[in-house]
Image (tube, rainbow, N blue to C red):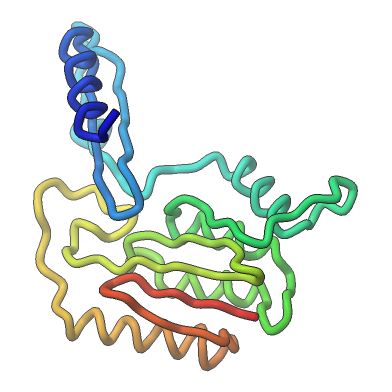
Length: 195
């Protein structure tokens, strides 16, 4: 079944049941959130109904995923040399990155600390392994695309010059200071890899 048919079927189900649905389409997939039906007499403020992306993850499950992928649980005798987390907030990614104490030139706690300088300035972070540790950092095109942002409506456009300045900061922090071997960007997605 095509994605458009799945979306239409979901919307039809939602309309029939009276349940609210929010869909967020990104270059990394589609997120659907269902909200329970409105309860008579309950006043919902704007802060309770706004969607803040990236979505919260179960950090304990995410930590177990990263530990398994990097083989940090020796008793399990399993690891994956190729995986990536879903889109995360910087604060969530920091927790996961710090789990990998060292891997070649990669020092997880230092990388996690450096990530804190970009909190609220990026759209999302993904962490994983392509043989060795890898980070993907998504940069916003608009201010309403910044992580943890709950503003409604479109924000202001982030110029290419501002994005380039942020990429230069990322390069300095991760490639120069923290010895990432590869640093590349495609559109507004930065790839940082240690090996």
